[in-house]
Length: 473
Image (tube, rainbow, N blue to C red; front, side, top):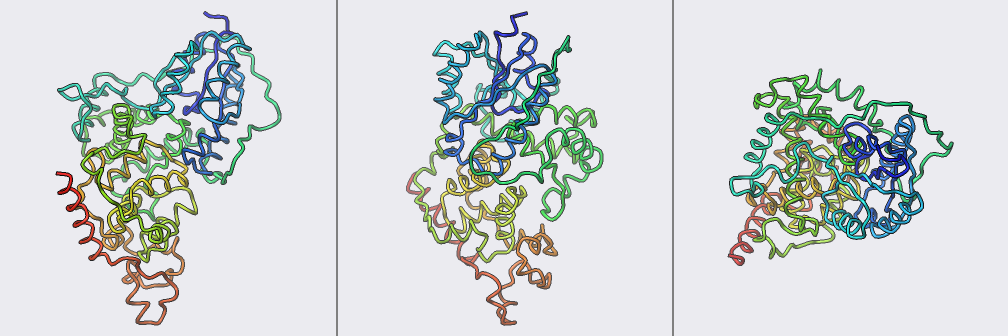
C-alpha cells in the first residue's frame, strides 16, 4: 500500500461514495485526502441552472460528511474555469506531495481536453469510468462503429449486461479508520442559486425512494409515465446528472428485484430500464462524436436549415405564453420547479422547432439554464431528437399536435389547471384549447391568444424542412 499522503481523490461529476470506482481505488491505496474544485465561471458559461448549483452544494456537504466517516478529508476550492483547475491541481500536488490522483472520467469535450492537459503536464492522473452502465466504446456494430439506431444499440447493450453482470465498485473493508473532524461551516458555492430543498438528498433516494418505486410503482411505470399530473416517474434524473447516484446502482437494484428483467422486454420494469439505456446511448454517442459538444447537428444534411428564430415567439415560448395550455403549463413547470415531465419535454421541443421554426440550440440552452437535472448528453440528444437533426431522431415530418397530446395525456386538465391557474375553472372539454369558449363567453383577456395556428404551422414546417433538404441534396 502507498503512503496515504501520496494519493488524492478528485471529485468532479461523481458526488457519491457508493459505486464510485475512482474512490474505491484511492481508498485501497490508503488515501485520506479528497479534492473538489468548483469552476464557477465555467459552469456559468455552460449555462448551469441556479437550482442545480444549489443541488450540487447540498450534495457536497453530504459528501464531506460521508467521507469524514471514512477518514477522508474533503477540500473544496473555488476556481474560475478548467484551466485554473489544472494549475490549482498542480499546486495542490506539489504542496501536499501527491503522487497519485484518482478521478472518474467525464465524456464532454472541454472536460476531456482538460484531463489530457493534466496528463500532458506530467500529473499522475488515474481515470476510471463511473457515468454509464455499460462501458463507453464497448457497444459496437458489426463494422466496429457506434450504432446509428437506438434499438440495435439497446439489444447489444442488453447482451453485454447478460454476459457481464454488474460488478459495483465496493469500498474496501475499513481498517482503523479515524473519523475526520469537520469544521462547523458548511461548504458554500458562490453564485446565483435557487433552492433545491424540495428534492431530498441522495441518501433518502437510495434508502427510501428507489426501494419504494421498485416495490410499488415500477409495475405501473409503463402505463403512467406519460401522464404529467401523476407521479409515475422515478425522479432520479437530478441525482444521475450530478453523479450523486450511480446508474449501475439503480440497475443492480432493479435486476435484483426482477431477476428475469433483461429478457422480459414487455414488462413495465423493462420500460424503465429502457430509459436508462437511452441515457447510456447519448453518453456513448458523445464519446464517439465529441463534436456534438460544439452544438453541431448530428445529421449534417440539416446544417443548412435557416431557422426563423423569431425572438418574440421564442420569448412567448420561454414564459409559457404560447396560447397552447399544455405547452404553457410545461414551460411554467420548468420555470417554477426547475424540472419538466419527460413527455412534456418532447411536446415543447417539437413546438419550438417545428411550430415556431426556432433553432433547437436555443431551446437546449434555455433548458440547461433552468433544469435541476441538466445533463449535456441527454439534453442535447433530446433536443436533436425533437428537431429531427439527431441520431435516430424522430423524422422531420412527425410534428406533435399540442392539442392532441393534451387530450391524450392530461384529459381532465389536472396538470394544466395546476400551472395555468387562469384556466382552472374551465370545463374539461375546453381546457386543451380554450380560445373559442373564452371568446364566446367574453373572457378572452384571461389567457394568451395562440401565437401560431397549428394547421398552418404544421404545413409551414413541412415546407421548411423539405425546401432545405432539397437544397442540400
